[in-house]
Length: 186
Image (cartoon, rainbow, N blue to C red; front, side, top):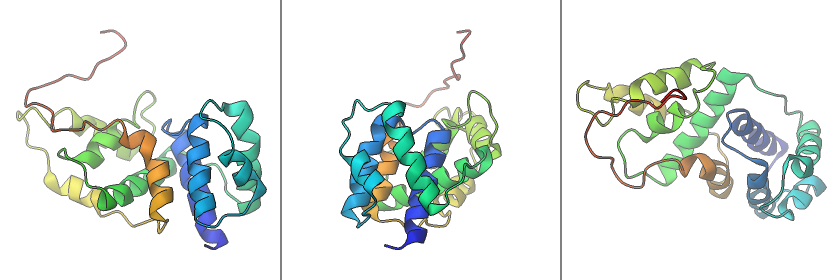
């Protein structure tokens, strides 16, 4: 793999962090997938050797050094959501989900609490109606999301990066019925 691929992988990982769906404890698995695909950077090797109990104090200096090496800059909310959406589209193309509208369900989780991404906010506003039957959700929107351009990353890297967000999907189709979004007030 070339430098552009590693730049993409690190950019997507940073975007996932920005969106709150990649924790410091997820970095060892991501780094292992990068090592298996041929990355030989010492920071990636050190990240791969960390335990699942790693925290930001352990991972951040290593991730920052790797990002600096590849010129990876911090993305804003919209760009981060777009990268995570493309990641999840790649993951769902490789490993389909057992529920309707998985892209909408996944991206809706990226909207709260600040609702700074237009795409995530749009998904959030549609998600509550996916299983209620009281409103017809545009099936073209989900299809559009699933057809986002590929990141062209190895399947093992996509799976490692997607795993934390993918784990929030229901494992089977939720029952039909209207469910309001929960808020901090009840």
